[in-house]
Length: 77
Image (cartoon, rainbow, N blue to C red; front, side, top):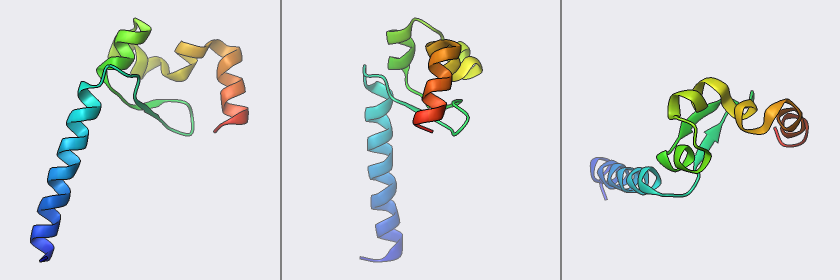
């Protein structure tokens, strides 16, 4: 398989996975080392009741509160 064909196949796979993640009703998010969201799918807003803008601005601290946020940062990140 040529490099161009392989890249095309990989791009198609990535687009397919991206579509599945975006359409999923499940909570799917990426969080950086500071507990800030880098990506949230619509399922996060639906399950939490916060808008995407609120979540992106507030990060995990918005969902966990100060105590939960500090526990997460100390133990998981």
